[in-house]
Image (cartoon, rainbow over all chains, first blue to last red; front, top):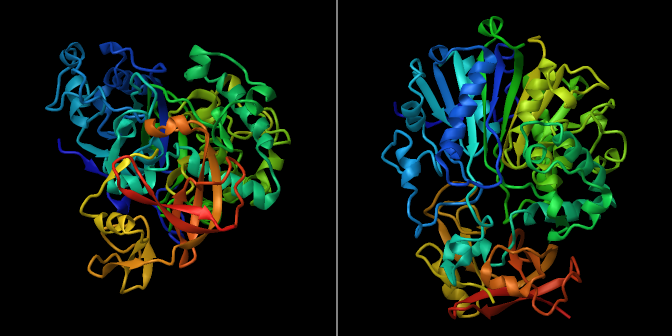
Length: 440
Length: 135
């Protein structure tokens, strides 16, 4: 089967498109996760391929669907956290030989193809439609929703997996060389780490609105708390440590004003969701969660890094598109699970949504109020990447589970879980899904 | 010290000009619009036939900055912490360039201050644009 990337026509990128034509007609039913690990131990059973298979099988079992009933697959083929297999390192033959291989020996180890999955999951006999989505689960969800809505497949597994190899991320490759190419040098010569651009926007935000870094503390504490109640997450599984105000406020800077805890920890993990039609979902094992809309943000900044004005304009546009296509208003949101890895994205996202009536410049004051899962204004009940490590999918799992009433210790109690929104990553460049407990 | 730069065909005019202590930025003559980093096509009209290189005044202002404490580039790690500022060019404030702001103490960056371009040699002798606060 030849698999290509989803065409631009599958995304809802513009304002003015009206209510999504498949609103309430596509549902998420099953959720499947692998375990998490900080870095790969180079064993076959913990490879990104093995964990992808595990997540897919768990999603099918969760939905009560047999493998032969699945007819579609939407996956993200890029699995790196920023770690690439070193050119001078021998290929892991024992891992390669443990699976049925494609013509790329790193398939299933440092990348993932549909072909590799189908070779190693012979039980998936009914797949006749597949697509790739770039980068994130958020993107793959948009594609899968449209695939089911358009009738291209009726029962679709969506997958995102991450590999993380030994060594500190982004410290190898060209960053370790004495000289680099002219195109890369335009941006990278000055040594700014990944969080730098967001830190700049946050600095401008604080200056404009009279806020400061310490005001992020309640959000960080809340996110870790919620993450520790996410049994599938990294911190819950490996380092169940709550954070204190001092932990956050005294942490070392990475790129001031972003410190260690403003950055998400890169990990290995995989997750899968089972999407189907609202009609078929009625007969499955779990309560259907209906998709009201999906939205794409594809804005490009004029300069090297987005300005605060550009960020706020795009977040506001994204909020308008989310509500327009879902046929709802901000007042209809029970909770939000917008992206947080880096933490300093989150206030832009929820201000753009106008979550609980906040506007630009209000989020850090909002964080000083009750933002817990027990309160009336839950913020990031998943705990996000900060609460469970860099997967960019905890927010989606949590949104589905909140609306199914099976979020366990994270279940929001201060408000009924009826409609939620999740998505990211960047304010300029993200994908969002609106979820609902009912199709109407 | 900064990594050296190996000019490629696409960016060679920028780096050649830097070696002559000149700052040039890609411009679409059809749209009369500067863009940086350079691209194969104009970000506005999407055409590639009208791209040229235009010399800048070498003056700008500090838009914003961060202080890097955990740098991924090996050759810069001994210099941590250091400033990385965003400069907006007077010729077009939409055009940004990064700078270590040589001569400005760490985390004492005068946001909004006027700066002017200087050219700094890297490990392989290639010069790169840097910016100094105008006193």
